[in-house]
Length: 189
Image (cartoon, rainbow, N blue to C red):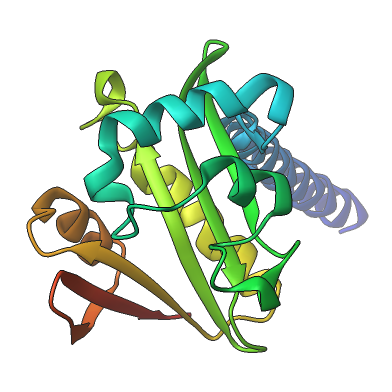
């Protein structure tokens, strides 16, 4: 009887060790992959990123902002969404996405209220569009805003920017308001 009991215990221990080993392997391999996926998303650095962002604004001005007088340097230097929203001075986060040390795109966002985040800018370099880089940046910003306390997030896009609207809806945004030049979309977190 004692031999059978020991054999059962040994089998049970082996099964537990095997199962926990598989769990550890799964956790390590999958969590490492998640870390690698975001390792190329980094904080904006003026020395490294400003020229790229200004170039993207120059190439995509109409789609980036309805304000023809917007000062990109002022926004980036002061971490503010616009000169007309100085109450958010220093509160706008900007993140860069890189692929093999080459800039792919950026996203800027901030907390507009205690519970509402706002995505101000999202642009992917034309060379990298259609490869879900925008979705990665958007999901990253949504997670960060949620961590900061956001319950909802708003984003604006032009009426004719159908590819952006498709992306936002794929990530769970719904149309909340139409204005003359564009659409506000909202996502509950």
